[in-house]
Amino acid sequence: MLTIRSDQFAALQDAHCRRADIQLAKYIRARFPDRINDISEHALMNWIQRLRNIANKYLIDREDDVASFLDLALMYGDDFHVHSWAADILNSNTLHGPVKAALLKHKVALSGVVI
Image (cartoon, rainbow, N blue to C red; front, side):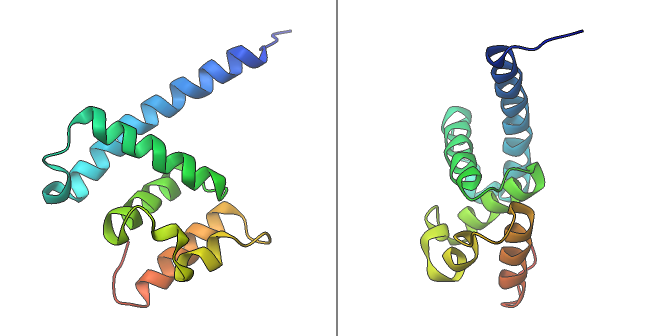
């Protein structure tokens, strides 16, 4: 039987996140070229990792949901998650991460913006 130690699992998880962050950087550069054009790759990766960590605190960890979280940060500012319209959803203890992400997208869609 194969046994994976916790340090090995953590290393696998870190490698997965690095690959996912590279894909997110490509996505963000394609989606918001004018806003991201002047940002170095290193700075962009740091920004993605910082916002991924914030999203994870709200149980948002699916890659498509993290991408939406990044969209919202670019559209409304890195601190959008503390504003009442988003915080009311994100701080709920009864909602799961994917539901929170869907509700945020719905809330934004009500204003006429589709994510």
